[in-house]
Every structure is written in C-alpha cells, then in structure tokens.
Length: 216
Image (cartoon, rainbow, N blue to C red; front, side):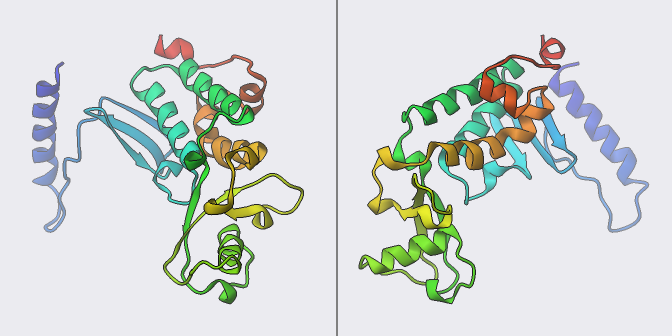
C-alpha cells in the first residue's frame, strides 16, 4: 500500500471515529511518519520528509552541550533513516574517541544556561552560577536574563567549581571524562540500551545488538 492509499484510509478512519465522538471532541490527523523509534511511551523520535520530530529526549533541551545534541541526532538518524543499530553504536564510539583525543571544537562543548536572577541570589552553587560569578569577578557585566556560556575544565574540584566562562577557556583544557559521562552518554543511553547495546559495550568497543537482525 502506497502513501496515498494509506492517507485515504486515514481519512476514512477519522471520519468513522469522529462521527461517533461526543460533541466538542475530535480525532485529528498529525502526520505521516515513515519510521518511528520509541524509547518509552513519552520518549520517542519520528521521521517525516527527512525531518525528525522528537518528544521527551535531550535533543530539545538547551542545557546540553552541542556535542551531546549532535550525537543524539546522528544516532537517531542512523536508526530512522538507515535502520542501522550498528551504525548508531559506531557513531557513539567515534564521538567518544574524538572527545578523548581532543578532536572536538570548543563551541561543541559550550553549555548555555540562562540566569533568572543575580548570581549572588542563588543558594545552589550550580555550574552556570559559578561561571557567572567568575565572569563578574573578571569584569564582565552579568545579571538576570544573561545567557551563561561555560565549559567544564579538568581538575579535582567539583563540576560547579570547574565551570569556566567560554571567554576564559582554551580548547586543550576541557575535561573529556565530564563530556563523555555527563553529556554524550546520558543523551544516548536510553537509545543505545533499547537497540541492544550497554554503555560498557560502547566504551569497550564491543559489538552486540539484538535489533540488527530485525532491521536487516
């Protein structure tokens, strides 16, 4: 059955359902998706005309570094466009290697968070608050509404204490472990687990997938 035939059936179905619904209720057509991937009932990705629609996944959140968002999108496209869990897993492995080897652009490591009040009014010492305080100490104007752009650098202190304004960071100083363990892996862990890979297998470059045969 081609797309036109499917859409015709959809119209017929909607008509049959809606004529029996109570007044004020109506079932609406949302879209025709070539393929979908559901991590959970409320966390999923769909693809329509090369556009990915994401619900409940980190791709839509501002407070993740671009490297995490880009990796997640590439993983989803490998599944939705190429139907290849193996390719998805290899993308994650490749990004992890690039982070470890320092082959990541600084802009892909920047985390953006907006201040809702003055930095000295926060009780919690969150990373963006600590970065904002450092920016003020170094002569920059920061206040409510400011977008704080920071990178987590190497060191033994807490993550918050290692959050540095982007203006003061050299690309060689970022913390690879933080970006792997707190950004990339959390952004893709639900997805790779659902296609038969564990984080340990990804980190150790071992290959296993229960869904590869399904897609082949």
